Image (cartoon, rainbow, N blue to C red; front, side, top):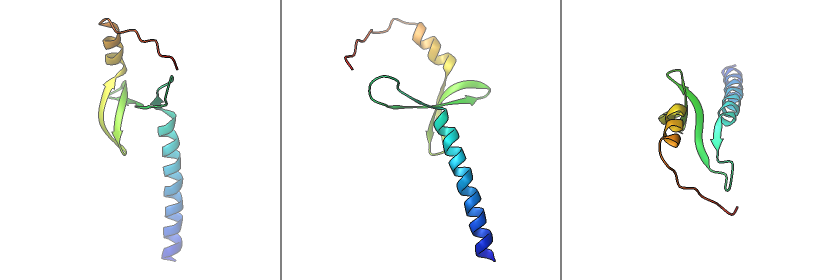
Length: 84
Protein backbone atom coordinates (compact mmCIF):
# COMPACT_ATOMS: atom_id res chain seq x y z
CA UNK A 1 0.00 0.00 0.00
CA UNK A 2 2.87 2.42 0.76
CA UNK A 3 4.26 1.90 -2.74
CA UNK A 4 0.90 2.81 -4.29
CA UNK A 5 0.70 6.04 -2.25
CA UNK A 6 4.31 6.90 -3.08
CA UNK A 7 3.76 6.28 -6.79
CA UNK A 8 0.63 8.49 -6.77
CA UNK A 9 2.58 11.23 -4.99
CA UNK A 10 5.47 10.89 -7.46
CA UNK A 11 3.05 11.10 -10.39
CA UNK A 12 1.47 14.27 -8.96
CA UNK A 13 4.89 15.85 -8.34
CA UNK A 14 5.89 14.95 -11.91
CA UNK A 15 2.82 16.79 -13.23
CA UNK A 16 3.64 19.81 -11.08
CA UNK A 17 7.23 19.82 -12.36
CA UNK A 18 6.05 19.72 -15.98
CA UNK A 19 3.59 22.57 -15.37
CA UNK A 20 6.31 24.57 -13.58
CA UNK A 21 8.74 23.98 -16.45
CA UNK A 22 6.14 25.16 -18.99
CA UNK A 23 5.49 28.33 -16.97
CA UNK A 24 9.23 29.05 -16.63
CA UNK A 25 9.77 28.46 -20.35
CA UNK A 26 6.93 30.82 -21.28
CA UNK A 27 8.55 33.80 -19.55
CA UNK A 28 12.14 32.96 -20.47
CA UNK A 29 13.87 35.57 -22.60
CA UNK A 30 16.12 34.53 -25.47
CA UNK A 31 17.84 36.67 -28.06
CA UNK A 32 15.65 37.31 -31.11
CA UNK A 33 18.40 37.81 -33.74
CA UNK A 34 21.47 35.69 -34.47
CA UNK A 35 22.17 32.71 -32.25
CA UNK A 36 19.56 31.80 -29.67
CA UNK A 37 21.08 32.86 -26.33
CA UNK A 38 19.36 32.68 -22.96
CA UNK A 39 19.01 36.10 -21.30
CA UNK A 40 17.01 35.26 -18.16
CA UNK A 41 13.36 35.15 -17.15
CA UNK A 42 10.87 37.99 -16.91
CA UNK A 43 9.63 37.96 -13.30
CA UNK A 44 8.22 40.30 -10.69
CA UNK A 45 10.48 41.37 -7.84
CA UNK A 46 8.86 43.50 -5.17
CA UNK A 47 5.98 44.20 -7.55
CA UNK A 48 8.27 45.45 -10.36
CA UNK A 49 8.88 43.60 -13.60
CA UNK A 50 12.47 42.46 -13.88
CA UNK A 51 14.86 40.29 -15.83
CA UNK A 52 15.79 37.58 -13.34
CA UNK A 53 18.84 35.34 -13.38
CA UNK A 54 18.47 31.94 -11.79
CA UNK A 55 20.58 29.06 -10.55
CA UNK A 56 18.12 26.19 -10.63
CA UNK A 57 14.95 27.59 -9.08
CA UNK A 58 16.79 30.22 -7.01
CA UNK A 59 16.76 33.87 -8.09
CA UNK A 60 20.39 35.00 -7.75
CA UNK A 61 20.30 38.40 -9.47
CA UNK A 62 17.96 40.72 -11.34
CA UNK A 63 17.66 44.05 -13.13
CA UNK A 64 14.31 45.79 -13.28
CA UNK A 65 13.00 46.51 -16.75
CA UNK A 66 12.88 50.20 -15.77
CA UNK A 67 16.61 50.10 -14.94
CA UNK A 68 17.35 48.48 -18.29
CA UNK A 69 15.23 51.07 -20.10
CA UNK A 70 16.90 53.97 -18.29
CA UNK A 71 20.36 52.63 -19.06
CA UNK A 72 19.55 52.14 -22.73
CA UNK A 73 18.37 55.76 -23.12
CA UNK A 74 20.76 57.56 -20.77
CA UNK A 75 23.89 57.31 -22.93
CA UNK A 76 25.06 57.05 -26.51
CA UNK A 77 25.40 53.47 -27.64
CA UNK A 78 27.49 51.91 -30.37
CA UNK A 79 25.48 51.10 -33.50
CA UNK A 80 26.15 47.60 -34.83
CA UNK A 81 25.29 46.24 -38.30
CA UNK A 82 25.52 42.44 -38.10
CA UNK A 83 25.44 40.37 -41.27
CA UNK A 84 23.38 37.45 -39.98
